[in-house]
Image (tube, rainbow, N blue to C red; front, side, top):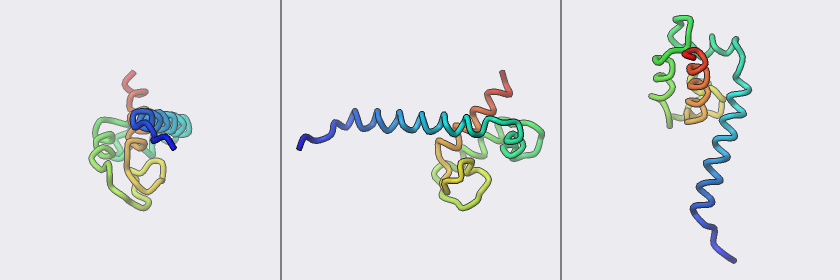
Length: 91
């Protein structure tokens, strides 16, 4: 049996992560989610809201607000969700 090429595995994993993040972003692409993503309740998704998610990357949690896709870990997928909404507001 031929061993897997590590470069192909990494590219496949990265591609799958990007595709999954895009699906999540589409799912969360609604105006009522903006309230959910506004952690400091200032009426908009700002850099402080993004920082709140990014500062907790790698943490496992159950029902914490920063776990935006409810997979019980705060990771790049959660950061992608809030970054997408933040970028929509600044453009």
